[in-house]
Image (cartoon, rainbow, N blue to C red):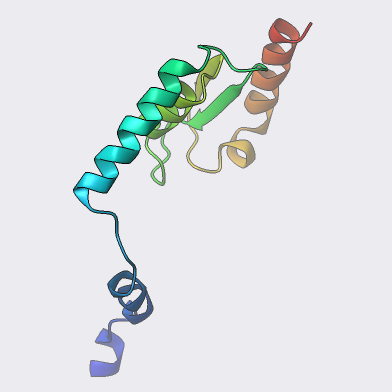
Length: 108
């Protein structure tokens, strides 16, 4: 049936076609500016930061979580085993344990 094979991505394609994307030069300029800001700011954040990531997250890979933790100068990056993008719903006890442990060790 031809109706079943219809591509339903028309809205996404329309948005993509009408979006103004950054050029390579603009992207490099933004990256340079971010690097300058990182080197000029202190190496630690104003308060302790914990980043928790699911081991099998297929929406955002672990490398993205680690990158976030590095960019915001997180104090700790935790990968929770046997969990995906919904880590707090899939492993609530483990997430709670990580948060409590982090707070006990980082809040004075």
